[in-house]
Image (tube, rainbow, N blue to C red; front, side, top):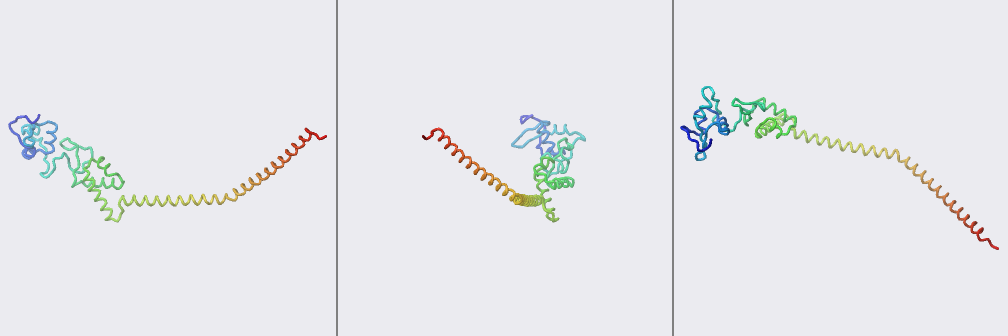
Length: 226
């Protein structure tokens, strides 16, 4: 199927959605999967109405999206991630009117400190939806006098820093006290070592003097005077 297809009756996607009562998202999905014939004229995509009618038929037409809705294939906000809409596509979430269940679920995630980008991926939400709900969440916290998660994290970091400073002071004080306790003992040991060294020096000096006298005696014996 392509631009060179011929048909008895063609209409733009918007016209086909209006006249055949088929959601825009469905027509775009059919066009993308080549389920219906289409062609492009002057930059406008036309679809063959006969193919559209053949796919819908009596009792098979889907409820169209509101006239001011976008052409993105998304369902009502608040549907759990991974569920499917009536047309078989994965249900998305649109910004603007999230369901109370979605708001409550995201507020719990905000309170747990989950990163916003992780929430977008986990809940399959549009970024603007998460950002808007997070702004409302922060506003509610501020209105209720409860600090925001950012403020709580900053306060926690400051508290931990103060605890580390106190712990360092305790360690320094304990080390100083231990040194003060053992300082007299260390001084006593140093004095004993010094006394032993002094005694050994005296012994060595006496031994050296004895060796000198022995040397003199051996010299006299070796070379006697006549």
